Length: 433
Image (cartoon, rainbow, N blue to C red; front, side):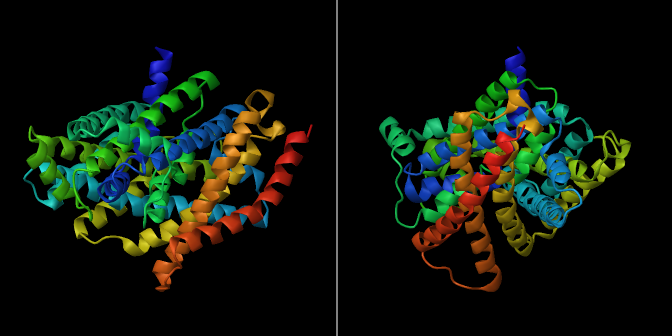
């Protein structure tokens, strides 16, 4: 029963990363390249588990969540001020920008099954999200989000089953990595929609009170199921041809498979949007509390004024863009650039922190296997972050980037250049008494 409750609790992470962006990216992968990119989602699911486990273990070992640990380690230094600026900017701006996409995505899903105006659906979605957030305790919110994840999973996996993909194609897609022409940036998109910086702050912020065995079991099962749902969406995407339109996908599924498939797909898309519309403001509030609050400060408790003010502001941005019908492109570009910086910064910090005996203690210290997995994931997330910064800068300044291969080589060289100083820091903190 405790393990089952842990799975339900950690479903909040799956609810956070399976949003409209994931649905669109995964379905586009299926529409454009069939099942050949399933391996990217398999890898990103493992990477998400590794990073989330490290962030939660940091909290269990040190008593500090990720935001608090960042603040305390760099308190009173110029580096600390820069870190605080990047984290606050990336989390708050990023969550606000993506909240708009979450609400718009939920509205698209609802519109496929309900004959209501977009404005009415936007307000209804925002009210539902606000009601869930008003419940206060993050653990209560997490349990309710588990129901949405279950609805979303059933809808997408049933739809994928009805599409009828070949078992052989699925196995090849999972275990034989390939890069079809023009798929390089799409692969990075599949990884980037699963390994999301603000989810690390969210997972770390709610990890208190968990034991390590329960934490590892719950995270592995919940995030693994989330990855399975994302793979199901890729299968669903194979039912249509690129370029993908979500509304058209619902129509195609209905015409090809019948049996209310349009409404089933709509339910999954709405659940994906609503669940992410709850977790993005919640993550922003938890991160802000870790960065700015003193221990047990009343106004930063889940029912406190400042905690609620943060998530209300993030939710309000989403409502504003949803009612205006304007895509928040400039804000999303800024968010992508900031998150491109934040993702490698947090990944490297986690690698150092869980090797710091004085911070996490001997029982939560990284072992050889954990270090090997985390080093691989940190290298990948650093590469991904650098690529996101380059892409955001290209879009902002109207500069054409070189081909995908050249871009990846350049980011790989920059990542390799960071490896030596990070390795030295890890050795130093690990050997400290």
